[in-house]
Image (tube, rainbow, N blue to C red; front, side, top):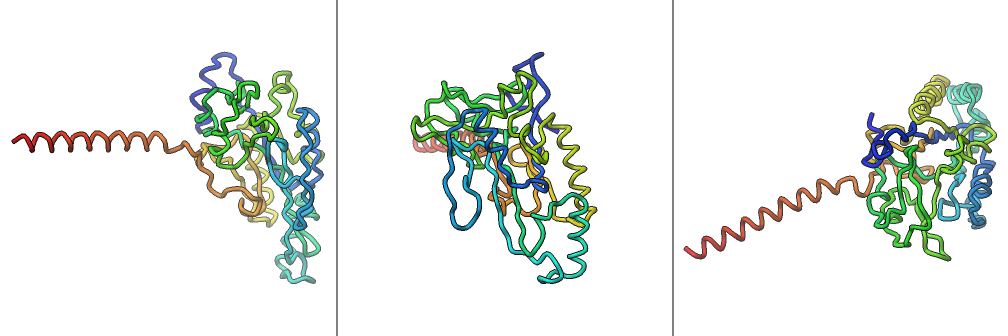
Length: 297
């Protein structure tokens, strides 16, 4: 399992800490948005309520420079009981899943509410780090990715490099702002504000390896209870960003939550591209040299 990057933990030496992260269990999220409020209060993030779209009860809509935590609401009409179209087998499986800890507001009365608190993924292979020209973005001793706003020059390269659309520039000054995984709190041995405020422990904070073990057990429990679509998103260290520092348990396809199904770091293939470009240049140079040599004869 590769959890290291070129800047962590080797550059920190003895000061390197265990890699910390988030495991967000969406199966117990109640959509209270306490995490959004706690994040804003602790980090002094400006108000960002965008209003209702008419298609959802969600009033913050997406992540941005002024929304570092966003609780997505996915409202779906589904047959949940025998009365509204579900088979007896489906209804029985649903009952078992609810007994195992799946909340009734997510499955019941013919209406399913999928809720998920989204956040920066703190990628292992973080494209934003690769493209930042000023060093404003850096990886901390905890393996998390943080923006130094006083160093950011507002170029916006990281905004387009992020495969999740997490990074965003604040309109009044052009600088980039995002989740820091409460870096200042970690330095004082405190858990991030969002995890502290979550009433159902949907947002779980800790050492990344421990969180992955805990998440595997939770998925197994839900599947045994008949909720076969439960799966982890971003826990695989062999994915396109070499694993997330903030990963999720989902109850449907990632696209349903507005997440890319197979995210890849936009700089992931750059070494191969440059290698092929160099080989092509060498071949072109050899061809030109051969042409000149042949012409002289």
